[in-house]
Length: 355
Length: 227
Figure (cartoon, rainbow over the protein chains, first blue to last red):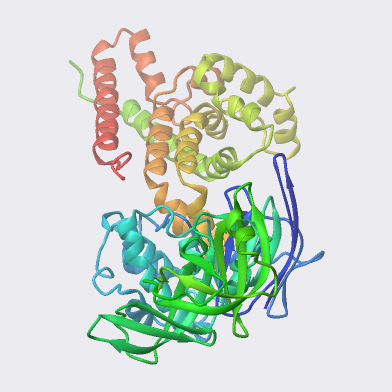
């Protein structure tokens, strides 16, 4: 567990954070530019000196009397641009941190990292400048991992890459998510990266943490700015239940019901993460008959919040733990006489698979 | 026509080589931290120190020589110090010449180093720190290799510029064989004595030497070739 308490004042910006981050899984630090997410990450790494305190797994990294210098913090840091050392070969880059920790503290080996990140073709290359942007970033991630960090930090690692390179590298990040037992702090301003990778979401705005919680729960909150994004929606972790070969569909099951989606190429029992956007969910007060929409879930309204002059956001619970958001017109909300506690039917027009 | 080089000429060449080598070595030692500070500091003193270091570029060497002579003289602060340490007075000695040359050639070493350090992105240093490298380790494993072209330029310019000094030597060193009589002074002597042949040999030697040094520098220094 990471406990961070920082105050930093700059001419145009103030960071004022007192928060706890989980000691495992992927935590996304998310917010618009200037919200302080990178500054917070740099403070945790010790690259920026703020007043305050920082405890990582009970160890003091910073307090009134202590400021552990960066090189004594067992962390891995991946910058926005890959920043490989231009005077070193790919292999020497990978081994830079590895060589600098005592052999007994080395918990990650070169072969593992080469396997996880698909570096087999790259490791023999001499000049890192000859690698593509995505390849360089993979080497940088490998280099950070080889320093056997207790925390891995990434500062918008994909934002300098083109879309194709991004698509190439995300599966590697997802793989790391499964392979690593250490927490990953991931700074981004891209919601699609958050929903693919994160378990925990920390929302920053103007140098403050405005929300922090499990991804699904936090994205389903109507009081946060994320609810007003055009692609606002919820994340549902589901299990592949059944394939329908005749119609090329797959049924996903979760505790709130089940969803039919386009054929998924994973065997039954696999875990998948899906995303249901608020704009793709409509509401009916009676069970719809003769609808082309096959995903209709019984739900109960738990919150209603107007959004601007014409729209309303409705939050519904499915079963015990799952929720859906629906964005409808304010007029529909009044015509249907929706109120908190009312039982309704949520019609899900489309489901986005993120894995 | 005289023989190529007289014994006095050879002695002057050897002295010049010795002086330039010692001065270059000292300048790399003190110039590196100065250039590092100038490249990385956010202090308000940066401008003033930078200007001070650059002064020898614009000042006539005689002015530098004159003030050093006054300071190292019997009534100057450095003169007081060296006398109380039992070292005697520095003007008209090899040591005095070394000190004067260090001042005179300082900017030619500090500025290329400063440029080289400034072109190393802060990110490279931060990256090294996140990979467990101490500041000193980072200096040797990242800064030095990346600044290698700058060091080469600095060493060559420092050496060549010291070889080429004349005004400072005359003011502070005089013309003492095997002590302070360097090549440029020797040429001056030859011309004074109307020995144009000998002056030619030494002068042409200087031209060739300087050209070859700069040619090697511009041909082999990888500055700007890196992406």
